[in-house]
Image (cartoon, rainbow, N blue to C red):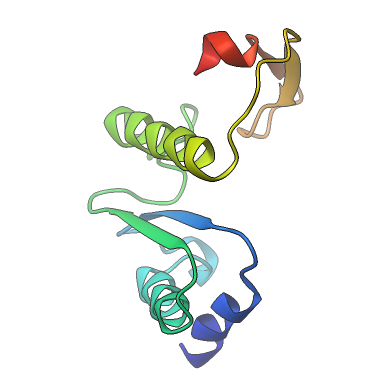
Amino acid sequence: MAAASLIARGFQVPVLILAGQRDTYHNCCLIDSMRAIERGARERSAVFELVVYPYAEHGFNLQRSAYYRGDDEADAWKRTVDMLRRYQPLRYTGVSRPVPCLSGSRRSKTLPPFRDAW
């Protein structure tokens, strides 16, 4: 756990972690590790937010995952957008941007112009 708390030393931008309480995927995202990172961030007064979804496992936000949780995904997306609005406000560009799909598929989704998406 000591190594996990050291991760916060490298934070140079606001950080949002969306964690599933039941996530044990390859032991990389254990909630105890996320809490240690949170303690490290707090110790150095870093802008950090840890959101824990009590019934979620790894991949809770991926629709094609066996562990998909729609309500948690919606909340996670809202929190992500809120954090971006607070710390990296976007200006309307009038251009749609293709973004890679995070579900592992090679397809890409096209987002509407920022004004319409937010």
